[in-house]
Amino acid sequence: MATNLAKMVQTATPSTGVQLRPKEYGEKGIRQFLRDVGAMANASVHGSRYIIVGAEIDKKGDKRLASVSPDDFSGKPAYANLVTDFIEPPIRLTYHSVSLEGERVGVFEIGDCQDRPYMMRVDYSEKLRRGDAYIRVNDAPIKMGRKILLDMFAKKFQDSVSGERVEIGFPGEIIHKDFNIETIDFAQMPSAVAASKLQQLLDIQSKENDHGSTMVMARLTHARLYGSDSPYEDRSADEIKAEIETVEKKHKNDDDHFLFETNAQDLQLVVFNQGDEPILDASLSIIMPNHDALRVAGQLPKTLRDGAYVDRSKTDASEYPTVNMKEEAIHISKTLGEIPPGSPVNAYEVPLRICAGSDLKGRKIGIQYSLFGSNLRVPAKGKLRLIF
Image 1 (tube, rainbow, N blue to C red):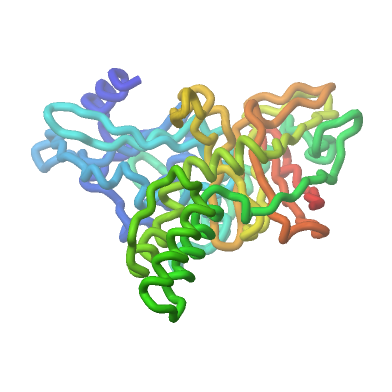
Image 2: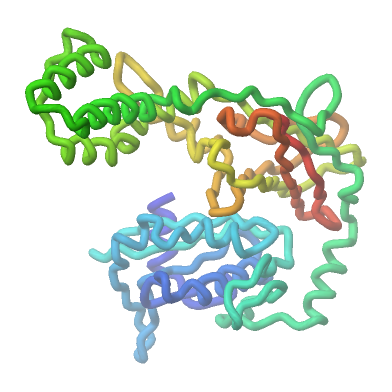
């Protein structure tokens, strides 16, 4: 893949399917980024499309390359998440780092786009509003008018599959619309337990006893909390407070193991195509409220092996759904490919891992789902429920 991309960068010139950009988009160029990606996705091109960052054609017609800042590949801004948040239907976007001629350029690869038109899902700014759609013609993005959009929708409607014949829900002997989830006490998380012990030591420090009595109580409390074999350290209140502030970071892997291994519940969805034809280029997205007592694994947790945490294989990691945490909601998406008719199929190779705290006990939370497909007339949409 890296070799093929390097050859493409070396030979590519501006066209309908290739855009050259002299420098990274960055935080100030997000509007242009969303416009360019949407325009590329709507272009009349077969196969993948590319935006090459760090490349331009000079006045003499020669291609010039300039290295892109390493920070641009670090997820700030999170380019793929921006596309998920603001453009629909879903677009497969990958940002590659490619080294060529001593320069490190970036290549946005936009996957084969069979579900046109791609449009703004929500407002980004006054100049890029919900419903706006662009198409790349030759080497420039052009805002689409009504006629172009109608032609795209008409073409999509031909030989299409009705979303009314698609059922989505939780697996079982029948497809369920509700899913029961056991709750646990988050106070038992390793970081919470560690913070509670430190707080008890801090409380001893704050008592208005004489120094000798406080020291004795501190030693006794330490022995009760950590065991007599754990050596006592004489720490100030400020030192204990500082440790409390870092306790979550220190115990992150332990917490992830507690939430998404020991106490995890797998959330799987099934898609039942009851039509006569397969659904092509399918992708499923779900949205659920973001609640403090509902934890969703953003990725598979590290595996505990021989007393140490180790990373998952790239294959396992890639099969897990894409999770995007927002302030008010959690967005989960997964590319499904072709969905044959006749029997339910699992949406996720690796089920979504969730864990619910006791604050949710007795409550219900709604989930909104949308199934997109290149030959679906309209997305199949509906609601499911989590019951705690």
